[in-house]
Length: 492
Image (cartoon, rainbow, N blue to C red; front, side, top):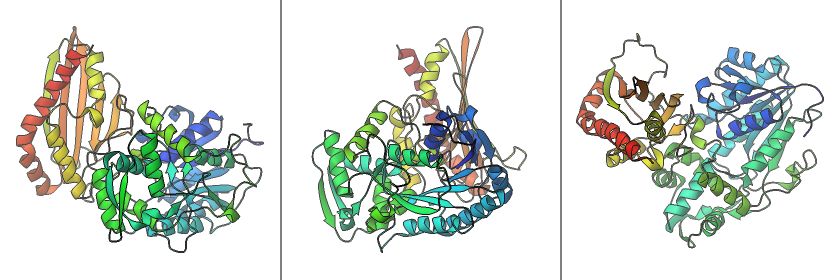
């Protein structure tokens, strides 16, 4: 693909998210001038494209941050979403979109590109209605807005695909609401990115709504049966019942799949309407379909499965998701903020190589587990799910390698210096803030390992929580360090 006629600057918001992270990589590969706006720059420093983009750390809710990020920008990609921010997420999304549009107009931005959701059915969910409203708020100024409305996105790491995959794998027999027979128009992530990439080189700005979708219209049940067949599983037995509400369905999905209830609720709620592209909103006259054609559902599923199997998941739905208890202060509170700091510190010396030790540390969590006492970790994860947290099912993007910003069960990789230091920040619901840190050093031929759990309690409740769990800590943390050494010693 050729370069734009003039040198344009592109802003990508939501660059730490599932679609945004992949779009940035594609734009960088095209040698475009890319700037990103992220709340926490550490979330993206592990990305291979990070050195090639301009990173502005800030919030889309702050006008000064918007002005700085939009200065000199030709095309701004709006890929922000707020469905995890409670029952008023629709108002939050509308306010953010309106502020963004006003700032873009003031900065002289020529084009806004927004990825929304197909909403042609008269009966649409609160989630889809919010997506439509967001597009309207973005288009409320003189800046042309090209709104691409997509259906369910099929790709390795997408929330919709994770729901589909885990429901099909784990439940050979399932009861489902009758509306899973509603039609939907899925699209492969590669095709979504194809359209987004091509909006970057449009000769003139466009202000219009387009539906983008794959070549097939199916029901959610059809997709589950296709997934089962392609995965070598028997046909799933699906019993439709009329009383399973979206709320109950989301609780059930939160227990069975890695997608937490808070995120599952709006996704499930969207299934009450038929999500089918309108031919009158076709994008073909503006951006022709991919030369090889749009990706059919079987190919999209096979591509996603192969990437998961080969540990090549580029971005994941959980990359930009943070579930923080409302009483927690910001993650970066200084040490002098008046908090009590409670610690469990373990140290050991060994003659096992750093390479083998580190392989175990970096592989912690997910399918590998937590080096003993996994039943206690599982119980803590289950409790977290019940109180609205992410739980332990979230897993990890890659089973062997981490990067800064990765989600890891109910932790987030905050700092990473390979073969030296790994620091995890807890995203479980807690009366305080918690970290788990591993440090490996070598001196005079001896490898020294430090494992430290740190907790900053929030008030008396936080302190009581720590001391109540102390008896479990006396078992969990020594066992963890002991088994890291044991597994490293057995590593051939």
